[in-house]
Length: 599
View 1 (cartoon, helix red, strand yellow):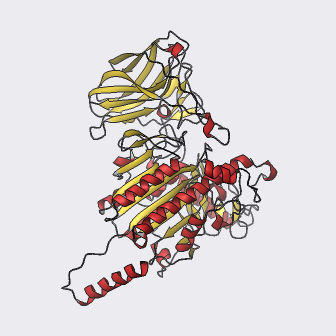
View 2: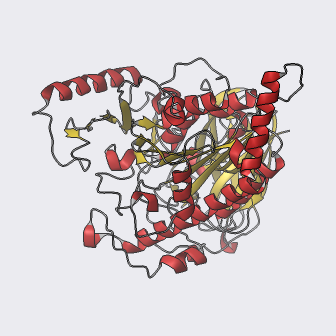
View 3: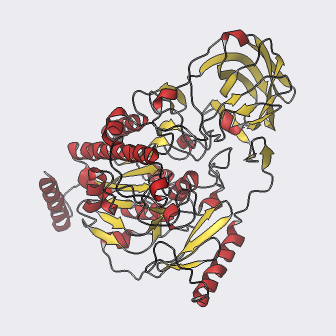
């Protein structure tokens, strides 16, 4: 069938070339499917030599197109996503962390989705966004006409998860990665007759390690012959859970590829597969030093495969170093689409390397940042964040420091790092506010009140607790407020109201029967709203989902909405403060979020 379609395409080209008067439709722009894994290391694939797991569909995708030998991302999630979307280093776009507001992509940045939308593409994002939750940081405001997933950095519920569809809360069914794939496949089918950009951003194998029965049964007793750097101390339960999640990913990638084949779209579709950082545990990763959170090779080297049948030769291997910053200019070049926005790019167009075109490719530097630590990579060397120099060709495991032996190279790269730091200022932004539990909250306010997106979500992640109130776990992304036991307690969101008006207020809460009846007040400026938590809702914790005990992440439960009433908000910036007036029981409630809906 593919040969028939290619023959017809060649025939049209010949006819149009020989008879200009013959009417023919212009060549269709290629579809673009980008699949992003979350916390999958370079070594978590069979094609890279890992015999601990089976990933036949991703391996086949790698063999069907181009495979990058040295492709680099960031040490953690949100920065990589920002670099992919903009073609610019994450610090330029204001992304300086993974939670409490620091994950937001500045509004002046323009995304790949915006460029493809302007070029006539239908655009959809499915899964984990992680570059801002509220409009206009929301994916629907950044070029994606369709969004199904969650906007936080990680999600605590992997089965029948509460998610979002274009700003509306929905309940998914089944395992979360399967649900994202289902919706991406629907999107492909709905837009099969026009060019589309489908961004399938999985949230696995990120913890918590909740694994479907089928995948867990396949790995729970599996022998792990290839060990990570901790050897016998490696947590094999974590390794098995991560590998089970990777095998689930592999099956879902296969489902997407099968759908493209079934609809006759495979030859017209560019498919990209990569991950956002190194592995999230000390499992096998090809002997590289570092893992997630590290600026060393193992923390930032990612798989990257790009397939386009008939255009990118099967089995092509790209030895030049590349990174997430290169995907925007590369995909726009392959799609023949113009870039929206004029801020200078850090990424390069890799299309000549993919298409086998002759090109003079000069060596380059790719910088990696995490918490003020900066490492730089050239094709031959890595200068780590402490100033140690490694020959990455002869010593890929970074075992021998050559900074003294190759002083000229080390000094040149140190100077480059210093220059990069001066330009991008990787230190914590001035004005960040410190809050309990040793967290900082981004000083940029949360925007509220856009008529085109009337409901604003204010999750626990973006609020600052005080007066004894705490979070359900140390990781704030998918947390909720607990221990609200005194009237001195406060929860504060720093907001900026765009539109003055009346807002409906809803809290997503739990409360035991014995504690029902607390009176609370929500205040902003001179406006006040009093309400009573008069209905109990005390569901069990969802502790039976996990194969490995959670560490630092909240054990979730089902939160329900309770209407608090209506408040008038005036335009401008200021704190939105929630406090208790009266507490008849032991506590007020556990609170996951409040929503403000402009009337």
